[in-house]
Image 1 (cartoon, rainbow over the protein chains, first blue to last red):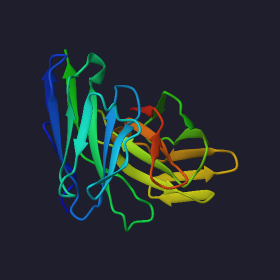
Image 2 (image 1 turned 90 degrees about the horizontal axis):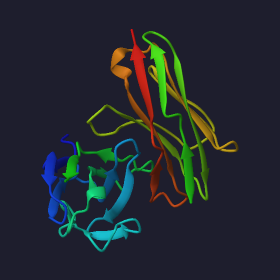
Image 3 (image 1 turned 30 degrees about the horizontal axis):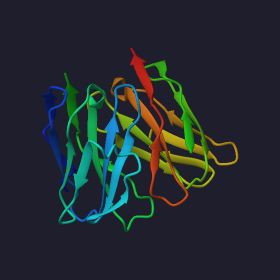
Length: 115
Length: 110
């Protein structure tokens, strides 16, 4: 079974530029998450989708971050404009809604550096 | 809100046993997870506890005491490949939100 796929793996941009990340979850997983992990910290949830609907985006900085999951499968996360403090690893995860434990399976992440 | 505390770093010797503690204060609780994260890689699931007691899975065991807001991850017969960050995460009452601690960096020396 294929895992969570993400691209690109690395991205370097200058502040005020825009950037987009892509995620393809495990096949059949209805729930998709985007996490931000700053160096030395645990992952922080940015947004959670159930199919193509948003369940929780309370920690998403909506003035600059946006995310969509139009067909309930792939998802994109966009930052526009980027700030220096956005430098982090952006992790996508998915889980099965039929599983009681709702284990999050993570992708390899995109390491973003904002200069 | 939720607050999760773990030691920042630990060092142990190959072949030994190490215990990584996690304490939490939450407004609701619906399970505790442990993840392993090697440098530059994604977190991978290790264990899940929702009831009090010990869950054993090979060299790894995890313990939970809900009344004390306390969990630990026990790693036996340490190997060099166990050098990684270990993340404790608590799921809220409704099961939607998983809040992670900052992680404990474990260094295994020969």
